[in-house]
Length: 113
Length: 116
Image 1 (cartoon, rainbow over the protein chains, first blue to last red):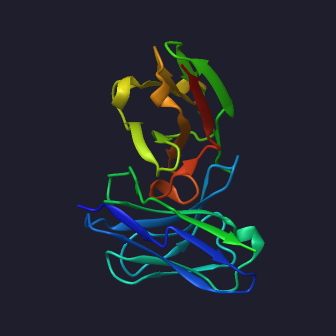
Image 2: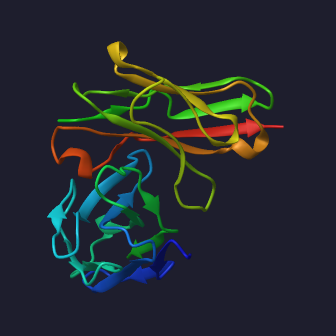
């Protein structure tokens, strides 16, 4: 099992450019999550998908969109990148039901200049 | 709003010293509690979790945590740290408020540096 995988690992964008961060899990988990990690602020939830076909906003959704493409894949899109979106982005998944622990991917380090 | 507080942002210890990292949460009701660890350059890994039962929970690598409901606390402990414990530690909680048990709320993290 690869667990949770993310691509790319690193990305540099110019202000205004768009990009999509990809996430996939091979654990047959129902729920998937996107977080951003900034120094001194811990992890903040951007969007999540409790199950295939549903998505909901988290704490900091502005400037982002998501797609739950199928049970395995959950992508995060930045339509017009801003320097404030410079961060490390983590995808996570959990089985669902009463299994609450989340499993994290390796992260994408994004710099917007 | 729900929140999780980690009291120490940076901790520096020598090898073999004892460790206690504080975590307090602001909910009432039934909660699930987690400690995650992030080693330098790596992703978050689960260290231990508490759902119910014995409030003293043992995790991997000799870590343990104690849930004290009356104090809304879930402090992480290790009797003797090693250089390899150098990492950032995150406390996280889910509960019946806000988005419910679907979501984890994370603390800001504590950076631990252990010197040989």
